[in-house]
Image 1 (cartoon, rainbow, N blue to C red):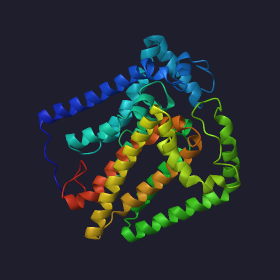
Image 2: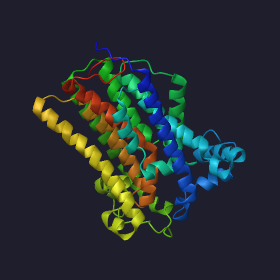
Image 3: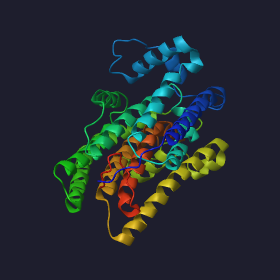
Length: 376
């Protein structure tokens, strides 16, 4: 077992300065959203939540909208409309801080990760009263629980963990498919002590189960996809004409393209038509570029040494596929919706990717990456 070096007091102080700076960035986005961004586009349902038309109704604990109306309007009564979003900013900050606190990393790496989590689309939508801010919170708590499972530890703060799962079921129950798949794959691999070959077989079984599920419910899924255009206003300037779900089973045939624009937001042609779309497209290209760079780097390392971390490749693939698949119906017809809804799981993907990537690369770099020194 490798022992980690003791972190000196000066480094702890520097570490806190980094987090203080990140919190200040989120405060900046709170005011930027209200004073600048709101002049160019609507802030989703933020002002509606702060007004709270359905606050304190009987279905408070099972309706995400009623819950948002209740919490946001109560906050607005205390802090006012601008600072009424402050509690949501704080919980989204916790959703980033808590899982990262479970990972050993140096200050330089921390700065890079927080820079990725400081892009405008993520910063704006998760620093105001929004379901995305709540999404960052519960996805972050769930991710922290997953890191404990990966490290063969007991999940810390079980109450918070199950509370986060409850919120996920209320706000984005479709995300639980990917979360359940990731946890199941990891727990089964750990409990049975599977080697790489058996982990790979388990992955193929997971793929087969998922494909069977999609095939069995293909008609239901196809019918539901035909209803999605009705939820997008044609009066909205960025809403696209529905050319994605026209013929039978278009949901499946057009899924690759839909997943792409559902994550990226604006197409290249749309980016050229409007400066705000271009900035959003550029942001997405940087994100994809960063992920691609590290995937290429890992692939080159695998080819050089002839070893692959199956848990990283297969586990992350299971989570990524399901998250992006269930995300795309709600985002493919409007680039603004794509970027906004992406905020709920974006931090989860960035932190999880770094964590699993660093664990996979640690044997080659000869450096510990976990707090207890356990190597994969």
